Length: 429
Image 1 (cartoon, rainbow, N blue to C red):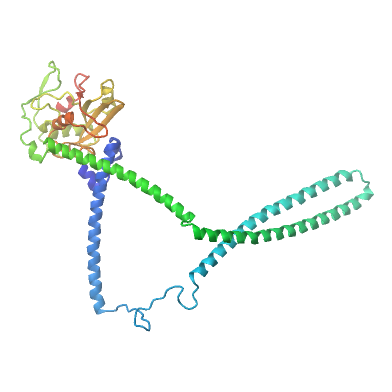
Image 2: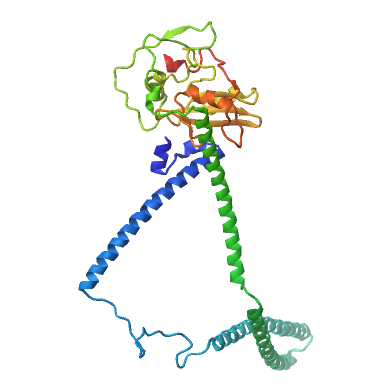
């Protein structure tokens, strides 16, 4: 299963949801290693292709056109340096012109904004005055006789002209004030920008870039920390398994472990449970699909591949292990573990992968670890790199050694059956 994920560089979302955070981090670390390996291969291939192209280009150049550099009077390659050629402006002059232009544009922008405000004030002032005067005339005209209305109209027009004249004078006066302020502001901004250029090492863009760089470095450090922790956990598990001497080698470890057709299998740990005889293997040739897609296919897989490897049996006996369960859901497993103490566990047949799920009771809830059984060994998917010859070897190993360093999970107490017949009975019928 892990090899398939690394080959496709893709994991099914439903399968990903079955993994906890630490499993996801270690799986990400392994996928990242595979990406780096592929990248190095592509880089090496590109380097060889580039070397071949250069070699081919040299061969063509010797027989065809080539580039010739323009040379000066001294015989050397002619080079033009900006600022040193006749007519080029020195850097200081260019810098002075840029600063002056920047100050002028800023002052002009501020002057335009100031004039908009001033113009709005003038317009409002005379509009209000006009409205008040008009209201006064309207109020008085009802008192004026019909023959005096024409005189009132003339008087109103005269007043309007006078107000417009005063408004124009006010506008001209305001424009002159704004122009003078613009000139003064341009000089102030020029001096301020010049001083900032001399004393400041970084502009606002540099500060924004530094902030983005700081955040990027912080994110890189966080990712590096997670990857380093996942790598350390990977190495720790591998070293621990080698020291224990429980790492499975090749598939020959499973030779001779199959059951005889007349071997009896006890379906429950209670002595009163009935004994069934293992039926003969199916005559049809078993071809395992790429993934489990139905309950019947999972049962067929278990009978064809797992029973010969003594999956679910106690060591050196024909009893079904107390911790072994059938095809039950995550919710059913958590219900079985609900009132149990920390360290209680069970192993159930997975519906997501060719393998199992180990459900573990911790103090604050539950954890679920996928066990990959698609190859000729058993190992935790994305957590523990150790390969065990049998499922019982994996369980016994983690009765003494923790599963993850962060969680410290030890398998202390198996969770047995609560139903009769047991939930694994369809696997052995």
